[in-house]
Image 1 (spheres, rainbow, N blue to C red):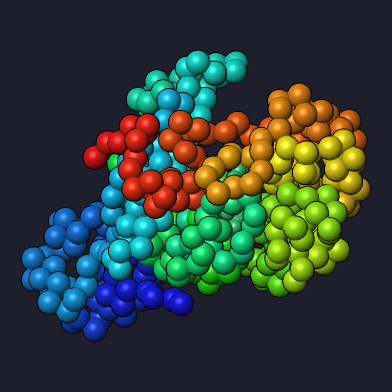
Image 2 (spheres, rainbow, N blue to C red; image 1 turned 90 degrees about the vertical axis):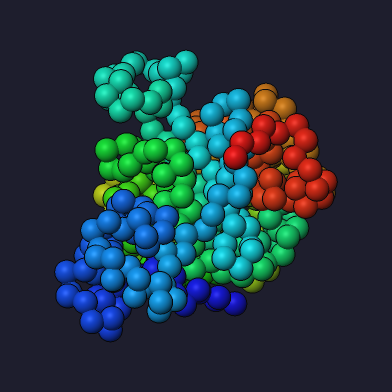
Length: 380
Ligand code: SAH
């Protein structure tokens, strides 16, 4: 399933670049120049790497090497500032990457970051990039639009990092000066593409400049990989998509629960080596009259007992082909109140970019069904 483009420079680590540079008969310091150009300068073509002599750039091209960055094919801008990118890989597979600026002037709490904002020259305090880890997804969660696509293939480390580089360049921002968070919550199940995701994480930390403490990886609950993930020296924070409060319900909503049920999932969560002050996130998509009752909330409290956790509540983002409804706001608030009342921090996640179809997998799926982008603002 791994169709890594062999001659793509993006995705190569420093030692791999060093080997390449040596093979092409260049001095070893060229590897560092390549690394800087790829991940820090975020060039689009090898031709743009002005630190390299012409003959080396030519030799890269002659040997079939290119930057290999996925391209922004379409761009949709929502009223709330969310930008949804449809990004295409070299083999024509497309995935989604989302840009979510937060804390604009209208919603600045105490205004304490106002100085930062002015200095940075933009009207947001921090922004989150949501990346895809696979084209499509095999996990088949019943409320998720990506599931309807099935799984096409794993993304390479270069394609994952490439999504971030493409968005940063398009938004004209640069971490660490600009506060960028990263979530592996786009299309796909990152823990079913473990090695490439972890390689991407290291490149994002070392090359792009986004600290791992600003990254969150979300999983549907691939239990053996949760243990592997906990053992990684450089890793994002972990979020587990819980989405149900008992096995019967979870198996209906997330068939993966037949393979790894709540008992083994929560055992892995309890064993997970959280760092100082780190909390594990449990995500819970609320489906009207399915998993959103006070009883469900009380069951969640019992389930996650013993884990230093917080819960992110997400009211379903509805979409074509999804047979569930979005609960009323009072229902969501009542659910949150029970968790918070039991001492479990719980936050309601604001839906982002509703007007551009922002739920997981929604844009691509909507395009596939209708063959049109009607109702969306399309740029570029
Ligand atoms: N496969 C991973 C990451 C991608 S999904 C995972 O399952 O965690 C990221 C989050 O979006 C998950 O918490 C998932 O439950 C949620 N999600 C999926 N479809 C949704 C929808 N239609 N509305 C709201 N959230 C959704």
